Length: 397
Image (cartoon, rainbow, N blue to C red; front, side, top):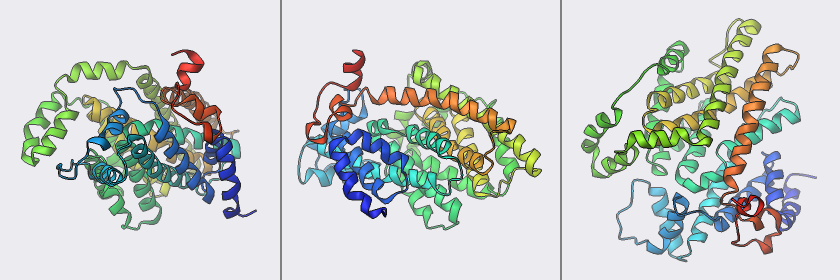
């Protein structure tokens, strides 16, 4: 049976069990039918999710009924255009979130396809890394749809450029600030990487130095110069550089999910060190000019930026989380190219990532169930409706 012929039966399965079919579609990343199924599922999730009033998701639900084309567009042109187009047909915020979800799902499916391309791992190991990556920027990303959508666009653009060297992917990278304005910084990081990509020792030095570099009062320095870039940019910058910075940082760093993210990043750091040792012993040195090596270097610049600006929670923490998500790919590629569980380095890397990764996946699932209707998980498509969340029903939380 060809891949195209799988579309009809997959749609039938989706109608009977949408959640289970979506999980299976992730495991088959790269097959043509998975694009439509994952886009349909994320659209359905966006439509029927039950956010609380503190989430951006809730604000998006309300935005379409208040939209007017006469309003000045925000810096994030993406939400302005999508909300405006949807408002021409309906003022139902759930339909708006379904549209956001469908676009998000297409990018999600394409990112998974890229991730799985040229896989050389055994099936069980491939599935673990695949679900680990899928969980990194998961359905919960729809709660802050701009950042998650821009994250997938950045990943697709950067990875395709590294794979092909084709500069047309620069366009995709450069439009990410129109989806989430903060990505203007990441566009700058990409071009910084482009300039330094042939000098891996400099990038590694920057990354190592970032652990001890303490940028104190960074918020006040940035705030002083933001007005020079315009009122809109200054207002958006003030959002990231909150006046209650110390209290916000304490809240962010105290959250359990943040601690899990830190644990997983530590596992990745150790795994990265083991990879460098393994490459030194097997090849004499690590090949930073390879696709895997270049992706490592790009991730290290991300990590360095996150470390340096750790004092700005909205920026530093998000950057560190995105760095951790992106770093899964080069680790996966290197382990796939050198898979041998009889090797002590591969054994240690596997144990580290299995322990940290399973914890991250479990916490990721836990956070998603906070806004997922129980009917979406356990009932056929015609019975999916706004009900109690999965977490409320199963655990009374």
